[in-house]
Amino acid sequence: MTSTNAWIPRIVGDANEHPDDAAGGMPADGIETVQLLDAEGGEVRHPTYSPQLSADEVRDAYRTMFLARRIDVEGTNLQRQGQLALWAPAKGQEAAQIGAITALRPTDMVYPSYRELAMAMHRGLDPVAILQIMRGITHATWDVDALHFGLFSFVVGAQTLQATGYAMGVTLDGADDVVLVCLGDGATSEGHVSEALNFAAVFNAPVIFLVQNNQYAISVPTSGQFRGAPAARAAGFGMPGIRVDGNDLLAVHAVVAEAAARARAGGGPTLVEAMTYRIGAHTTADDPTRYRSREEEELWAGRDPLVRIERWLRDQGTPEEYFSELATEGDELATDVRARVLALTPDGITELYDYVLAEPSAALVEEREQVERYLATLEGR
Image (cartoon, rainbow, N blue to C red):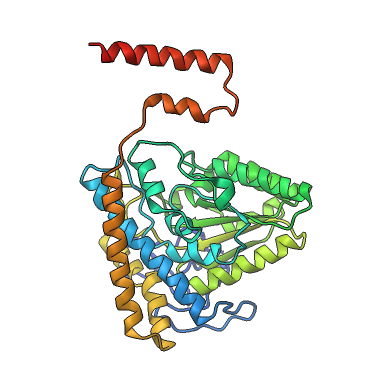
């Protein structure tokens, strides 16, 4: 069997360097990649999976993907202009995110990492809530219980433990909710991810591990991370592992929908490896030109998930008016978001103490008072 990392396109044009299979550039390592749309937006027949979204539902999904990318670009611009401390672009991963979350119920819990802007927007989260975290003026801004959407996790892989624990609680409550947790290919190298997978399998927890394999853990390609593909490793933990074309909205939706139905029926966890590509930098502190080629980026640009769905929608007869109105909506949203971000000012540092304990301890109160006294001396200078 060919190693999972042998396909990475290091030198475009040399078939020995990236022996892609017929699934539009997926690894030729013997693991099937579920695909329902090719790179041109044409439908692909699959023996097990089929599209479950109507044309109207695809249009709604595409709208969220489009608007999320517009805000994503604005986030990068704001950081470059000194208005954000950091930004983690999600460009290229929109289909993996929206395909997955549209396969869930609104009450299903989602645990993101730090790149799930599109998912957050689908759940109704104001993107400014994320941008102000990146502006460095707050730690948390939304009601997790109301949105059933967890806070961004900057400790790589830690959210998998939280998701597994929550899913075990769902089972104890006798509910039929499902938990989805998002992680990258690099996170699968973390020890606590293995612990989460093992606990989920042993306790038959209704949790879906969505590994967005965007080919790089910052600057380290998958060839430097692991030899066994995430989808293949799932069997070692005792759960199904499925690989899907992560740039194919319809395929991701179908695969996650099946995993969710199985979990609700008591079938336990599933690991879904969504093969995608991080078109931009890991974060705005990263320079991807130092470790990947222009040819590689151009290769994956041809598999852009938004372009693929746009072509499908046009083939379905979606009028040009839809796309022009959406472009206007995107510009207006970006302008509004920018204005509100620039108007944000930090709260006092002592606000941190308001969100530690529901009932502050004596030690916490004392520490806050010490900080307030220290700040008062600064003001008196």
